[in-house]
Image (spheres, rainbow, N blue to C red):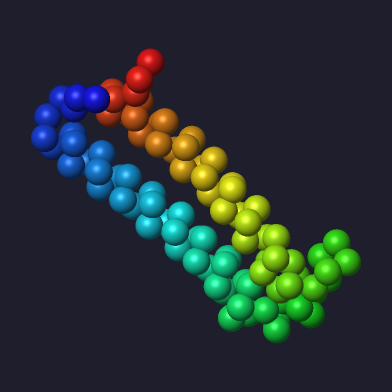
Length: 88
């Protein structure tokens, strides 16, 4: 992996950090927000026969985390192609 210039390498890293911070914020909001902080409010809603806050605490945060992994992979492949550092 070689960048055209130091400026491209810094821009690549900056976009990578922005993406990671965004995805980690979503993960924290779902894991702690939906599963703990807002659980009482969300438990008023039924989701597939379960209280929504309980569902997020038990399964929803895991599904969300798996989706975030796929989103990160997809976005990083696009970022690699954008800066010409992809492996193909």
